[in-house]
Image (cartoon, rainbow, N blue to C red; front, side):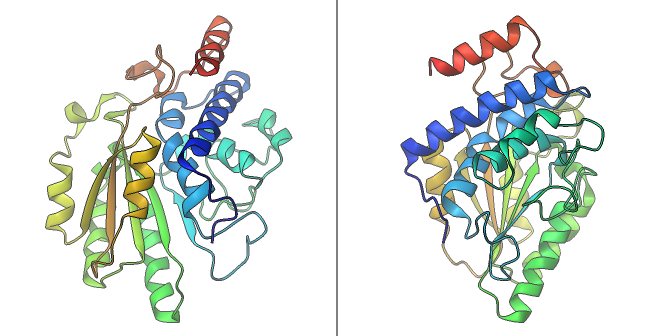
Length: 276
């Protein structure tokens, strides 16, 4: 079981703390960061690590632990802030983010960062590996579940849809795919670059069970993840989010894909989060 199992109100407070860490982390990074993507996923990763996942910082090698894969690896900064908040890594590692020889590189690396299950960053790889892990769990009789978080722009990669075919064919009901549908990617709006809508119908056509939630509403995220029922098929949770969620001057703005707050922006962002 999850070692924290926080209430929805407690999860909301954790999410605010993680957002504050993200603002400071990215502002101090020598190589920038992906602020918008870090912020859009906060409720999702907070709910997973503090309520949903059957794992903990003292069970990194437990063969029955649930597996979480951060397929949208460019949002590593937000992921690290969650891992630090949950005790997987020391909080004093955060200021070293993307510094030379840091244990917190610009994309997740299993060999460097405790809690990271897969090296990601090249998009479209997380889901195929998650499918393989889900098949292995089935064959070994394990009760573990495999969770994978993708971006919506990432779904333009054909490897995701090949993996979906395999997942449906093998009836991998131990696989939970979460789409962070923040509607933006590197160069602009996803609908203009490679439109994936209607996303729910696409997943359903591939044979997956589909649920939707408001991805920046903690109650909605928890209800969706805890409300999944055994349908004899893989699950997809489409989390409708806002890129840059939680900070008004970052929300929904394409330029914040690879921009970080500086100076007065840091102060303003932290003040806004303090007044939530």
